[in-house]
Length: 459
Image (tube, rainbow, N blue to C red; front, side, top):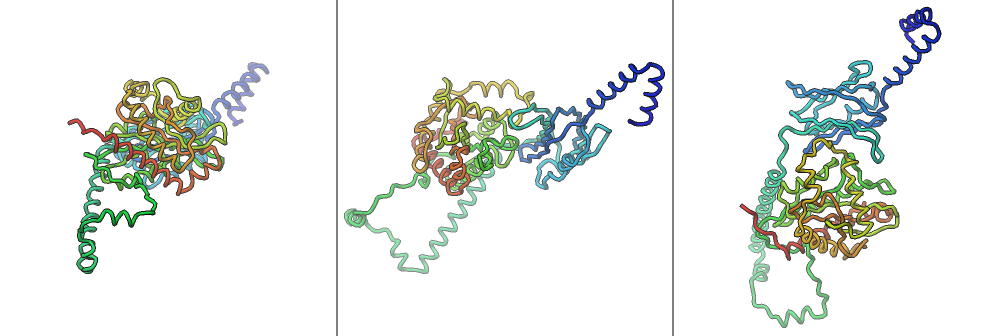
């Protein structure tokens, strides 16, 4: 106790007696307890082109105030009930040079129980600051979401990527033709061999007699679509939401992002198709935003990629799901949908920003036609996965997955294997298995569009 406080208590003893002193001591004790600093559990930063998220996790709620300043751009945040500590200082070191929006963070003890954070910004932002209640493995989380004032247009980015792809393909075709012509000029025998000659069907049949006829692989077929087909690839979870965690510590969010990137690379090699990732790094994207992104790029198909977890560790096999408007087709499908729909709670969304349009979209805007098309493409994908991997169910299951509720886009959710099964967790981390899963998904997609070519765009 400081000297001034001690002298005041001594005077109080002389004037009001023992009972008064006990009351004063009790009051001070309560004040000390009330003003005790919160325990900071961890600090995290999730940078992305969409937005940068800063998370402060503590054992109690932290009152805050903030202000935006210009010249230069910066965000100033005052946190009450917190004292400067090594964990908070770690936040400074977590800023990466390639963060799109934060140049650096400065921290200091602004007042005895108030910590001030100053975010030096690379450009003007629209911040959203909010608190999340404890959920799953997390305690109280203070969230700072820094959105750009002029967000990037996903469709324009996709158009630019498509233009670059067309240019590279044209250059590659030109180079191939020049190389072929040069070889024929240098080798007259090869030139003669390449001349078109009448075919002898009987001779050809005799040569091939007894040889095994290998059907063409669907993923290598070139399908002449009348326009580019846009495939929205949605790696589940991300950032604050790790998804399911395997016995060996594997995070679902990392595995499905790796598979999605492999699939994107394969689609990039298709002349008539172009891929779009709803997230291309380790950051959280709310469920409604995933749908919104797919619609912004006018996707012809939405493919959400996940890795199962179940209460029973021996559960195994891949699954494909479509949306249901009439309840789940099995109790396991219902359980899976509930688990995936909890992503927003775990990843953390600012409920106040969800307007009526978004809420309505997530409630029920899907059409019967969308669901029927989803079942068709889901069946093609499931068949191709089943050609090399065990299946959990031999049919496409249905349940109320929020992320599949785009009203005008066929949408499927693929559970690539059970990460909660130790053997399958090992497979999911294997590059060969990831490649085969990506090949099978692409084969199923191409098979579906070969039978159901996309219609021309309006306008």
